[in-house]
Length: 359
Ligand code: NAD
Image 1 (tube, rainbow, N blue to C red):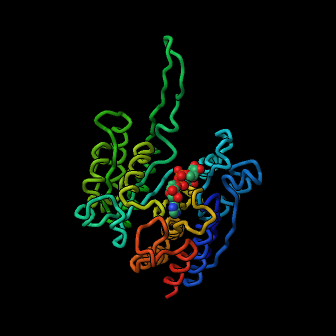
Image 2: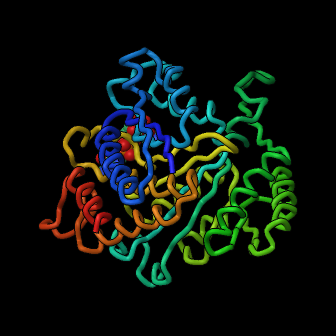
Image 3: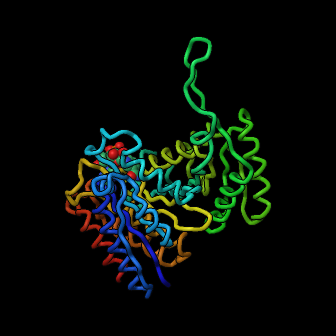
C-alpha cells in the first residue's frame, strides 16, 4: 500500500519523539512492503521562527495532500510572551479547524507491565482497563455563539452557548459505534440529560444512530456518574462517547488513571481527508534536547494511524504488542518508575521497539 504521511515534529521533545516514530514507520513499512511517501512540515514555535506564523499555509497544504499527519508537540517558554493569536498552540487549533477534525480518540489503557504506575488500587485495575474516549471536537460550548463578557445592569456578565445540531451529534455517534464494532461493541454515551436540553437531543440522536449498529450495546450515563465510575470501576467501559466539554474533562481523567502521560496516544479524525495522530503530552521543555523523552505516546499514535487512517489492523497490533513486549522486559524511560538498570533513552526505546518489530 502507498502510505502518504506528513510528519510535523513541532517543538521541545517533538522532534526527538517524531524521529523515533519515523524509525518505527520505516521498520513497519519495510516489513509489510508498503511504499512510504514522507514529508516534513513546520508547526508551532518552529514555524513562528521560520515564517512568523504558527501554521503556515504551506504546512496546511502539505497535510491536506497526505492521508495522515503525525504530530509531535508544540510550545515552549521561548514563545510564551507572544500574543495569543501568534502562539504555537494556535497552530494546533488552526490545524484541527483547517482539516475539520471533529472526532478525537483517546485510548486509556493500563498495560500489565505498568500496573504499578496507576493511582488505582490493584483490585480495581484487576479486570484490566482498555477504554476509548471519543470526544466531539468542533462543536458544543467551546464554539457556540453568542459568547462573551458584557455589562448588564451595571455589572459584568459572561456567557457561553452550548449548542449541538442533529447532524453534529449523528456524525460523532456514527464514529463511536463504528469504532465500537472493532472493539467490544459497547458504547456508553455520556450526557447531562436530566438538566440540559442539548443533552436530551444528544440522547435522542444517539439512540436513533444505535439502530444502525444492532451488534453494539448502548448505555447512557450522566457525566457526574461517569466521572465517578471511571475511578471506581473503569473496567466496565469500552467506548465512552462524549460531547466536547464533557470529553475534555473525562479524557484527562481517563488518562490520569493510567498514571503515565508519556505513554498516551491520540487520534483526531474527519469525514474524509487526513487524520492527525499525536501523543497527548506537551513539548516538555524541561527535558527537551536531552534524549530523555518517552517516545511511546507518539509510537502508539502511529499504531492508531495504521488502524484508523489506513485500516491496517495487523500493523497496528504489531506496534502495540511490540511496545507491551519491551515494557514487559522491564525497559523504561525516565518518566516511568522501574529498575534503574533498565533505564533507556528516547532513541534507545525507539531502537528497542524497532528491533522487537523486526524479530
Ligand atoms: P507537558 O506535557 O509538556 O509536560 C508535563 C510534565 O510531563 C513535564 O514534567 C514533562 O517533562 C513530562 N513529560 C511530558 N511528556 C513527556 C514524555 N513524552 N516523556 C517524559 N516526560 C514527559 O505539559 P506542560 O509542561 O504543561 O506544557 C509544556 C508546553 O507544551 C507548553 O508550552 C504547553 O502549551 C505545550 N503543550 C502542548 C501540547 C501539544 O502540543 N499537544 C499539549 C499540552 C501542552
